[in-house]
Length: 134
Image (tube, rainbow, N blue to C red; front, side, top):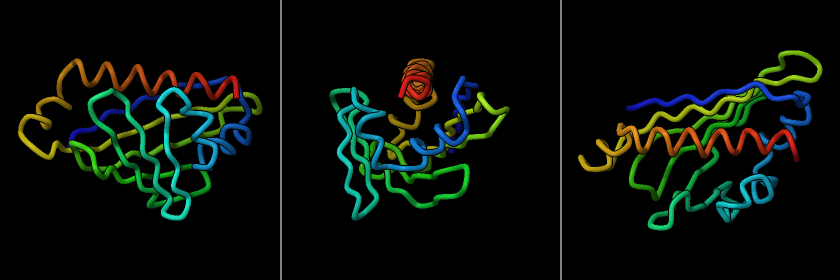
């Protein structure tokens, strides 16, 4: 498995951030530019980070300060975890960690490439930044 962690502190209260990050019903608005489809019966989010493939995330664990997804129907397998921690009353640390492996040698090499890492970090930083304005 290959891991990438993206983390940033934002100027929002823990409870405000928690209400978005831990509620997949709010991902449609939060992830709007990725045009997510939310299947609340199966706790599944489908989206396309790039035009040529889509990803399904299946909610597998929900805790007080984190939400964990399993990557399915993607060129890789593994897990992604959002975690939120209160720094102070108006500041929250938000992180997203992926632990993934390519389904083929090609995709395993791709996820370890500078291109994939930069694209993933860029997309996640964008999502974290959006939390400040929701």
